[in-house]
Length: 135
Image (cartoon, rainbow, N blue to C red):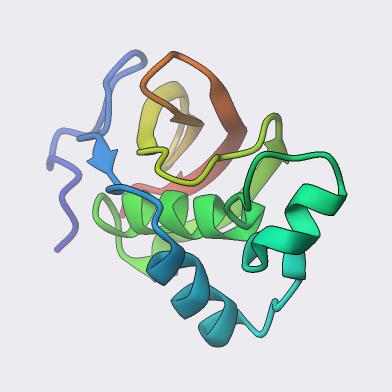
């Protein structure tokens, strides 16, 4: 059974937040290997600096994966009907993303969720939504 209460969620209910932890070079290297995304902007300091950046930064899809984990800690994976995001800002090395969700609407046996990934300084790096079945 999912974590959604039997009575069902109400508009405004918040999902338990997920603190993803610090983005380290090790996290980026492991995600590059797991995802197959070896873009040097995420793992090679020299390449990042040649592009005018101070350092490497996290893959956008890593933040989306963390949001996926937020969802699947709230409902079973087979309850997810749609999941979409918009990449809003980069997640820097040593950033500590926090994933949050809120019930925006309930329609019958489905809920629409508003989702965000935010850094400690308030920067929203990812914004999105999901529709989940409640049963």
